[in-house]
Image (cartoon, rainbow, N blue to C red; front, side, top):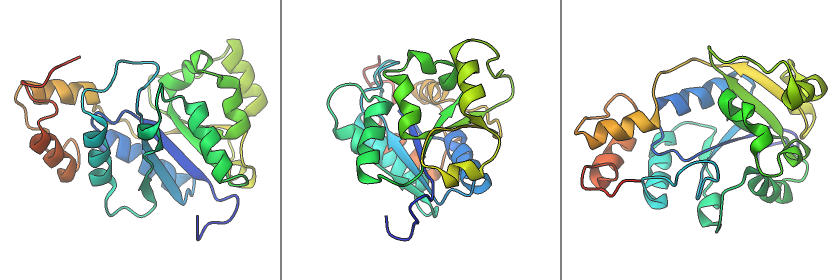
Length: 222
């Protein structure tokens, strides 16, 4: 991508974003600022392999992400997973990105809960061959002190953000972020029951939710 050097880190922030909200956005912004990341890519999942299918369809979720990040320098949307058939495995997305950006640093952003489940991911050991893993750590989660993740942290963990800039893959960096008690599940339930999600998300996302009726009571639920 023009304007970036080979190793300038590209952060990959995936999720169903059903819907995207200020908890997602604040985490991405804090990581971008603290780790000096020039680019954060939001990748809405097509068919998430480890959870139920999204309630809002792909078109609406993509529209919500675009509305959420509008005007924020460094925030971009990448819709490649929405065009892929089958489950949206992170390793497949990283293989795609690595084919495009052979020498650039790629940082896969995950929450601590997702990191603790990493050994259950499809071809999980390949992920660190393709990218760094940046774990957004919130209060209440404990870093594993035994098992394969503990061993992985001993081998690959770093407390130095510069490592994310100087190498293209292979390190695990854990960073504390502000805890915002907002959940997509709670928002869907709230809207389904007639609530207004104002101030839980940017106004453009709220407008998309209300205009589309994606979480309204008449919507078929899963």
